Amino acid sequence: MPEHSSAHQHSNAHQHSCEHSPNTEPHSHHSHEHGPHNNASQPDASADPAKFWEKRYGGQDRVWSGRVNATLADVASQWSPGRSLDLGCGEGGDVIWLAERGWQATGIDISATATVRATAAARERGATSARFIAADLAHWIEDPARIDSSEHGFDLVTASFLQSPVALPRERILRAAAARVAAGGRLVVVAHAEPPAWAKGHGGDFPVPEEDLAALELDARAWEIEACETRERATTAPDGTASTLLDSLVIVRRR
Ligand SMILES: C[S@@+](CC[C@H](N)C(=O)[O-])C[C@H]1O[C@@H](n2cnc3c(N)ncnc32)[C@H](O)[C@@H]1O
Image: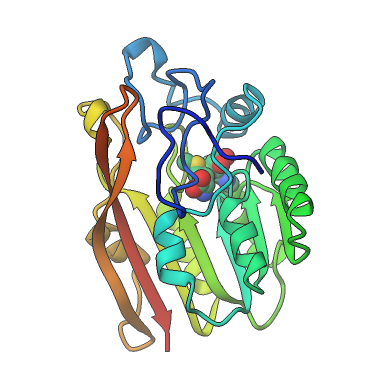
């Protein structure tokens, strides 16, 4: 998948896939994201999530860069492959990257447009062990076996920027996801910990890592905390100046 050539383009090879393409509106995107916002562009928080995200993806050819998120690439590149699940996979950048490294990688997203796009990108890149499911995670948490009934569970569950300006039971989803992690497997939660410098003051949830860790309600005897930290990431602001983004990172491993 070709990369972006927008003002948001990064110089690093492992950039965050959660980036705008050049034709992104200033925008109805999730509230943590880039670009100046005004009240007129703030989405209606009571909008139907499926319709909101379908419109978001349907409104342009591509929303994200197609590249793996830098923080995930940093932490996961040394891990032995197994079965993985990405929650809110968007256009599949992380899933395809994992598949290219030998993972049996599944991504779930509420937008069928996003998963169709992800499937096409995986095919284009020859990532044959990537698969994508269009499903609402709010439904998945009621019955995870409908999507994955394997006894083994997942060796890796990832949630990269699973953040939304409309309804999303994020904490319940993360807890349900933790329950599907196999012994020795990991859950990795990456989130925007604060809005970008050029969009300070706009609303949205920006979890600090301690909040995400607490939300998991893990039994300390059964889990090891491998990371609970923030990480800075270089980016380019819409006006072309260098800026930094702050990611929240939580990695927990089932003993
Ligand atoms: C900010 S984007 C992040 C996409 C991708 N993980 C990345 O890093 O580029 C949030 C994603 O969550 C998805 N999403 C939001 N609510 C969802 C839900 N209830 N079930 C499944 N996916 C959902 C959206 O469609 C969107 O693709």
